[in-house]
Structure formats: structure tokens, C-alpha cells
Length: 162
Image 1 (tube, helix red, strand yellow):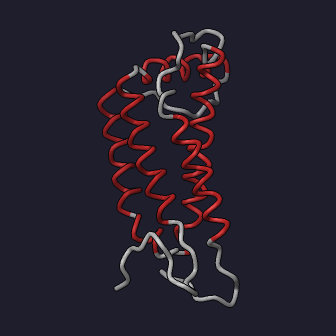
Image 2 (cartoon, rainbow, N blue to C red):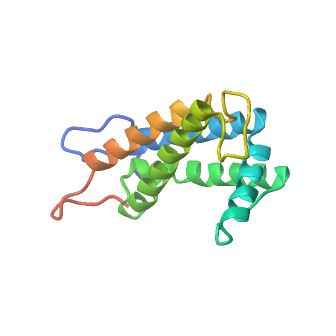
């Protein structure tokens, strides 16, 4: 069984384990930030405002407990996938791209909400926006993961670790 090494050996392909862990920990920090700064009421009000304007709007509203438990479970699942990121598992790469993309948009959204002081015209809040303090970690972690995913891509003739 291979050990999880942060550094790669000579001739061994790069992996995306370290940036995966960084983004997982940034996500954990972000959930705590949102929970402590009153994100959920702003989110629910935004969803309701969007639904009143656009009936097809697909986002759900949440009760606090369900929202927090769901995010904690998601964090645990992502952290449990860490060994596969260190093995550069090919099947995890699409999820890693999705994970990075979602959090790049999430961090950017919290930053823009802070700049504008609102999410939609009817939902205003005092600045900074809830969840803003951890958004730079999400943005940095997402970019780090995207760069390492590109750098660790396997060529067609190379071995794949799974």
C-alpha cells in the first residue's frame, strides 16, 4: 500500500492531494464562517426572492440543522476521499474539477455580495456578507487545486494510480 506523501519522488507523477486537503479545510472553515455570521437567513431570503421572480429557480431553502448537518457530511465525504487524491486517482479528477469550480464561484459570490451589500435587490445585509471572511481561502484553494489538476494530468501512455 502506498503512503500519502506530500512530496513526489523522482520520476513519480505529481498528484493533487495537498491542494485537495487545502480546499477541504477551506470548505470546513467556510461552513463555520457561514454558520457563525448568519448566512442561512440571507441565503433563504435570496432563494425566495429568486423563486418569486423566476418560478423555475431550482435552489431549495433549508432549516438550520438540516443545512449544517448536510454540509458537515459533505465535508467528511470530501476528506475521506483524500487518499485517492494523493494517489492521483483518475476517477476522482472530474469531481475535483467540479469541487474547485463550485468553490471558486462560491468564494467569488461572497466577495461580490460584500462589495454590493446585497444578493438581489430585495435582500440587503450589513457588510461584510456572511461567509466573506473565509472566501479568500476558497478562491486560493480552488485555484491551487485547478493548477495542480492540470499539472498532474496523466498522458495516454503513463501509469495511472487508483
